[in-house]
Length: 331
Ligand code: PBG
Image (tube, rainbow, N blue to C red):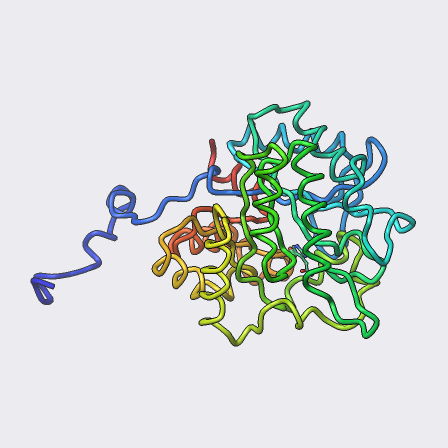
């Protein structure tokens, strides 16, 4: 610093709007947003999700309409999550690699409606398909096995890529799954399908409303602590990221978002790769509850939190507020 008060007054550049605009270090645009969408069976169906006020499940036709809306708002990518019918869930989650499953039909509906105007990101993990709500296969003791699960996740990923998915996003936290999926994509004619690895995904209390949305919450017994990360750990997040990059991830994700911005920053500084964060369902619900209680202005809370992700080093953010934020930002 070259000067001292009063020659130096940091408030000088803050005094007027034009000057604040000129000195702003971070920009947030609709192109920074990925919009997660929940898919349900039927046609013309919209099912509001009670624990995520303002968010609905849509049938495939409605998903295509949301994707068109995203394109018109300048949002470059949507993320899909299916609410699989109860009678299609099983211990082994085999519906995950049914080429005609809800996910594949939604991917195709978007591609028919929007072509390559939008990216489709698909989640790889078994929880929307298993009768026990865990992300992988259980052994006799109820432990989520790693290697058997990876084999199934590979089938799930190839199924999604064949239906037209652009970005495979493994959220299961099994060891070695990025390498296995990358090799299978290469061998099956999908060299340009990306992998965004949920690299540092924590065993978090913020996922509750999401589990309602995909219908796995009521099924899940116990927790996911034997595969998702301990919220106490930061060094381990860096190891997870290093492994996923070495295995072929094109980008990495930190999840949840706001409580883990320190991890975002450390990953960005250490690896200098595209980092994304997922502002998860519980974070969305917290903002909505605060606004509904009069504890803060909804629009301002939404934009401030999204800007914080950009400032921390994110290339983009998965957020249920994507469409609303894009409207506020104007395209
Ligand atoms: C599935 C998955 C979860 C989320 C994204 N993918 C839930 C979980 O791991 O239990 C959470 C997203 C959110 O809360 O918005 N593996």
